[in-house]
Image (cartoon, rainbow over all chains, first blue to last red; front, side, top):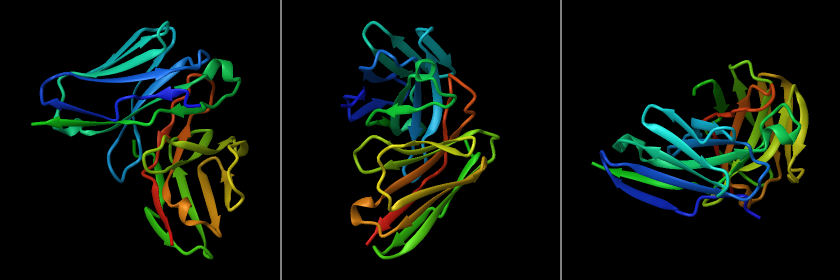
Length: 117
Length: 114
């Protein structure tokens, strides 16, 4: 049972345009969501996160939107740059409900983003 | 994030070998994690240590043995592995001081079992 799903294995975007990466989840106990970016032969790099008390969080070119009723989140990258080409993972945590001091993350399968010059 | 280091970066071993993966975090975090990433699969959590105590073991075979001697170091001892254990092994750490808790990853060790 995959609780976090990224249904698009890949996305191709022109430089300067918007990239929209999507993620769906099924566990209503999830209350903290993160996006990670991964280049080949490197570990995932934390990009941006959002708590369930918010519906939007912005950091520079990156904005994450959360729709709790639809159990859906998305990552917008504007404008997209060739250096953004990587695998993007969304992850979710039931932090508050988990009753632990550490964050147990559930990851999606990842979406390969390619930004063409 | 360069606060989590892993060695070696690449490892090739036979099924009868014994080897260890090392992870070190320089972030002052309380929690450390081992993940396995196989091709075309989501990251799989293997073990969690919180304040040097193992708090999660996600049904990992006993041929993988973790060790956390202090809050900055984490090891994964490997013995009699199988070819299907070939994967990228990632270490992560997090503040571990309650929700929300963000994990930061090391570069990984690419393991090949012959």
